[in-house]
Length: 319
Image (cartoon, rainbow, N blue to C red; front, top):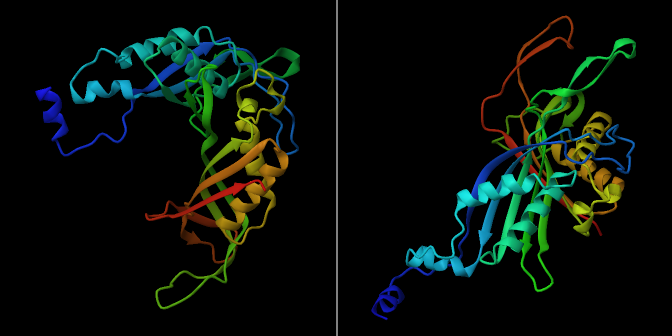
């Protein structure tokens, strides 16, 4: 009783708690192949064999019953984060799905079914891509190796699912899917002009310029079941999203990065009616001009720019 009164007199009140394990890497061999996707005109991606399925997974758990661990050092309800790591590795062996979202859903449900101490949890995953090497196939030319893979450090898929315990079983209450770390340079076909000018403005207007952007794209489904269903007919593959974004950048003459990401978002909502929302986080990483040819304006040497850089954000929600 005296201890409880002492705690009651302390100035800080716990507003929220969470804990978990981050960067749990796994490389699962021979996962279910991804096939049966709905094709779109901007992408040749139709699926992947998933012979090597890599992911970097975070798990965060929530629950008021973990509060004594914070306030009194009572760990009797605490599932150790090392246990979480082992659970992810062992449970991933049983995974029978083909997508990152399905993996997170599978792991999240199994956590809540196994540990009643967890009231809810947030699963986040990042793809660790290892595409197959291209190898000779006799008279057929070159094809994808079934045994040799190379790490790809380019853009990659991400997903986040928040699951809660309910009487009927675990359900997804929030989600976000994405494609991160796109880096795209367009040599011509972009502009930035007619912007507000005052005494602080030194930037010249440009009617045609190269444009280099760092870009992350995120989306949410109208029905999250489409993201985790074993039937991929309404699944939105991040590879298709990335291809669609690239094609719009290729085709569209933009007046600004704001103009560009708006067109990208409209195209994605047109191509994927199952999506409720798309979000863009972009950075203007346009190179500085080092040397320009006096005889041929197309011949230019560029160099990396110094900081700072422009940042642009946009969210489009379907009407």
